[in-house]
Amino acid sequence: MATQIIKLTEWTGDIVNSVEEDLRKELKRVILENPNWGWEQISIQDVYGCAINQLTPYYVRRGVKANFHYSQSELNSVLQLAMKRVKANPIHISRIENK
Image (cartoon, rainbow, N blue to C red; front, side):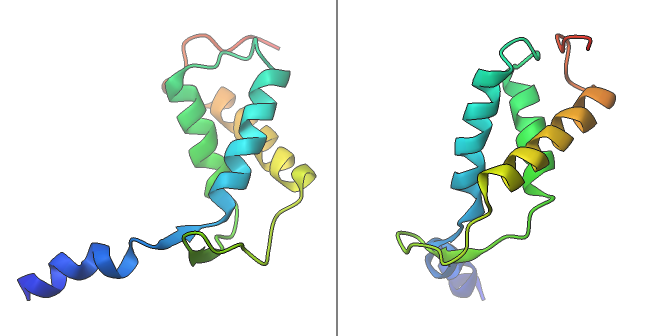
């Protein structure tokens, strides 16, 4: 049994959610467009986590180009909703601007 558990990383280590990289790129753009929003490491993590949980994952082997990508506008919409949700429930955020 222990041998099978050790192989878990070997069996799953090459599988990635292809949506994550696209979301990270769009999040960088959103941060640059909204520099005064109150971005801190924890708020970035909260927005990213909230957004990624709203998107259907598409798993591929690492290094394989995904056949599916969300559009930039779809990713932006999910990130905007995540920002609103995090701002409305600021568990960790201390410097979000008041809009």
